[in-house]
Amino acid sequence: MKEITEEQTTHNMLMDLIAEECAIDTNDVMEYPPTALSLGEKTIQAKGGDITMPIPIGTYGNFSFVQAPPKSKKTFFVSLLASVYLSGGNNFGGKIKGHREGRCLMHFDTEQGHWHAQRVFKRVQDMSNTKEVGCYHTYALRTIGYKERLQFIEHCLEQNKGKNGLVIIDGIADLVSDVNNLEESNLCVQKIMQLSAKYDCHIVTVIHSNFGTDKPTGHLGSFLEKKTENQIQLEINTVNKEWITVSCKRSRGYAFETFSFSINDFGLPFVVGEIYDPLEYFVPKTLTPSKPIEKPINLSTERAGFKGTESMEIPF
Image (tube, one colour):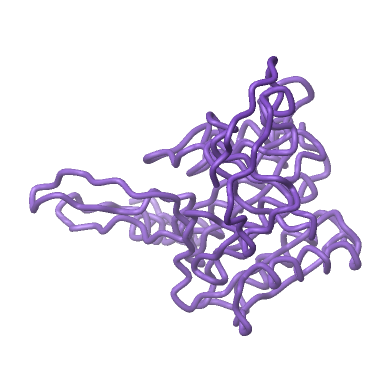
């Protein structure tokens, strides 16, 4: 009988551990992954009767990513999501809901200096509509190398083990030396998948779109597309250029409804009305979510971007 070497024994032990971790028993009753952020609800038929469940923007144990062209308010959007997560819901986030359940928000900015990063983090606090935001950890990682950035993120999650909730990484391209490096891109996305599962958190990360297309940048973007729970796309609204349209391009489950957001005069993002009827839901940029206008405003169709001079009454 051939003697088993120490190396083979170690290998077999490792494979046994992997089998124990990865084996799925089809007889087990498995609950739907708990939701971190949601928009709307969906009623589904089940053996025990109808079940109404939130439509997730992201669930714990998974990751999603936001893609958009440069300077299309990606950081404003993740600030909006972060503020909703901290408060459970606020007057900036419309129908978006946060399901925090006492967990922490970890917010990493990889490209801005300390001053600009702090502005982003304070914006999240200002929008959360709560005096005590609780466990909110913020880091600006611009000054460290790309390898150390990912290592530091993992270190923070390990230090906060058992309390991690939503994790924002703005942006993921700074975790590799080159978004077109096949091996680095693959390893980076694999690490994001591993971290989200190991620490039972939802990771939202951000990447640019390729110039002139709706594809995320490089091999890194391609790997993200294949592995993500939700692929969230931002585009400048075709009717109102001051609005950004948010759509779920791809999803492993039910896709949330398309919506738009804008920036008010205080530099704070807020969800506006349905994008397909801009006159009915017209919102001047001087309007803040906390100060609604009580009376309708009359605007001509010409001012609203249509030909003609007939006045129209715009309800809010």
